[in-house]
Structures are given as C-alpha cells and as structure tokens.
Amino acid sequence: MLGVIATLLATYSLTSYILLRQPTILHRKKRFPFKASHISHRGGSGEKIENTLEAFSSSFLVGTHMFETDCHLTKDNQVVVFHDNELYRCTGVSGLVKEFSYDDLPRYLKVIEVQFTPGSFCNDESSPSCKIARLEDLFDKFPNTPVNIDIKVHNDFLINEVARLIETHSRERITVWGSMNSKVSKECKLRNKNILTFAPFSYVIWIMACYFIGLLPFLPVKYDCFELPLVSVIRSNEFARQRRWDRFLPNVALLFSEYLLSSPLFIKHLRKRGIPVFFWVCNNEDDMLKAFELGASGVMTDYPKQLAEFLKKHPEFPIEL
Image 1 (tube, rainbow, N blue to C red):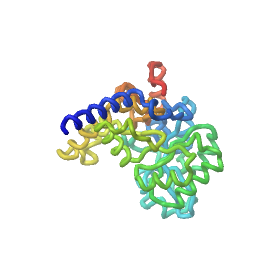
Image 2 (image 1 turned 180 degrees about the vertical axis):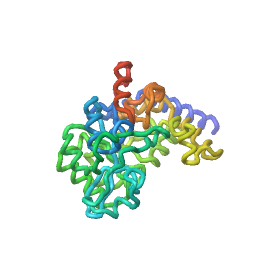
Image 3 (image 1 turned 120 degrees about the horizontal axis):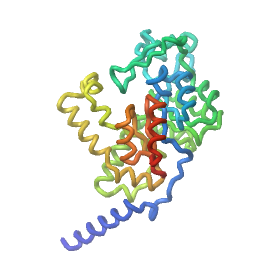
Image 4 (image 1 turned 180 degrees about the horizontal axis):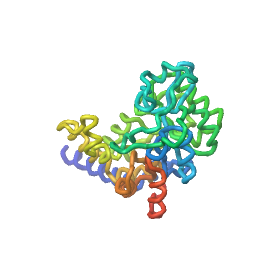
C-alpha cells in the first residue's frame, strides 16, 4: 500500500514538475492582445493630478502602453474616473462621490500627496484646477489606448454602465477591467466575456496555494492577467506606518505575502501560458528593476517619465510572453 502511494506521489510530482515548465503540453497558450510594459497608475499621479485628462495626456506623450484608473458612479449615474469613495483627499470637500451630481462635483486640489510615495506631492499650482473626468471623456480622447479599470464599488448599475461604454467604443480587446472584490469580478466576467479581466485578490491567493502544492500546472486559469503588489513598496516604513502595518502581526503578514508573490518560477509559468503579470506600484528605479527581474510583463508607476527612461536604459525588459 505504501509503495502504491509512493508511486502515485512520485508520478504526480514528476508530472507537475514537467507541466510547470512546459504548460502548453496541457494548456493552449493564451494571446494577450497588446503590450503593456509601461502602465501609468492613475494616469501618472506623481507628475500630474491623478486620474485627470491632463495626467493621461502627459503619460500618453511619453509613450505609455496602458492607463490604469478607477471608476465610481455619481448621483446622476455618470461614470467618473476617481479613486476614493470619499472626495476629501483629492478635492478638500467632504462627501462621497455618489452623493454629488456630476456637474456639482468639486474640482481637484492643485497639490495632492502621492499615495505610494508618502511625503512626495504632485504640485500643479501653475495650471488651472482640474475637473473630475468621466470615463466616456477618457475613451473619447484616447480611443486606441488600452485602459485598465478598477471597479471600486459593488454596484450593478456601475458595472453595466462601464460595460456599455466599453462596448459602445468597441474597446473590448483594449480594456482590462475587474476588482479586488471577487463578487464584482465575477459580475464583470458574466456581463461581457469578451472584455479582458484581471484576477481578484481571493483568486490570486487560490492560485498561489495551488502553485505551492503542485496543482497549478493541471488547472485552467480563468483570468487574462494578474496584477500583483510589489510588497516591498507596501512594507516601506512610511507607507506601512501611515496605515499601521508596521506592527508585528501585519508586518509578519506582509513578509509572508512578499515571499508568496515574489516567485519567479510562478510568474514564468503564467508567462508561458500567455498570462502577463503586472506589478504595482513601482516609483523608483530599484522597484522597477526588481519587478522586471521577477519576470513582470509590465509595471504600474506614478512617474511615467521615469519608467520610460528606465525602459530605454533596459531594452532587455520585459521578457516577451
């Protein structure tokens, strides 16, 4: 009996090992439809006020491959590109996005702290204050530029309206959408299976667990790309301290997460299956280098000009899918 179990385990381990390195033996390689090594986080919130048309225009001029943005719904059902539920951090006005009609939304502040680089500020005092943009405005201005959309709240009307805008602008193959919330991600996939989707947090954890027990090479992957945090950025002292993550238990959890999410072999396996991995948020050259050395197909940054310069200096990155 023990011999049979040992034989089965050996066969399982050997097959898993082979398929981990040669996944196309079992799985047809996916075809991600565009290159996205340079991704502008919120349009490039370190150089222009985040999520504004001015920010997207600036990153477009330096050759970004994809915009990353976030969506909320206003009181009069307009889809706006805005990160927080609350308006205060970016506008100085208290209240929720959903409590204002679009025409009544306050304008952006001219100086906003860069969230992933605490202590650094985007200062745009020389320009007129910016209006909060609608998703439709972004699609109209950049009809051919890929956009990554994070649906920030669980709202069926918001999901349907974002899908409608994507479909109306014929952007299904140059738009990635989803949420860290698995329920929202599931609804996105059900709403239109032709729109690209990124994996939610719970699915990432599931896939990582399957990887570590050798099961991943046997399983299909339901999503088109993975968007992972570069945990060393999150663990940086000031960033963690602001969120009280520098305490013992949260710090242990972050260290464990960094170990899990920093496996080059895991990323290489996904890449061989045609599934890109994008890391967020890389705001200095060391972080960019670390992400690409791990095997990232692209990185998100608040500093598009800096990432453009980095990619010029390092033509070996990214490794092609």
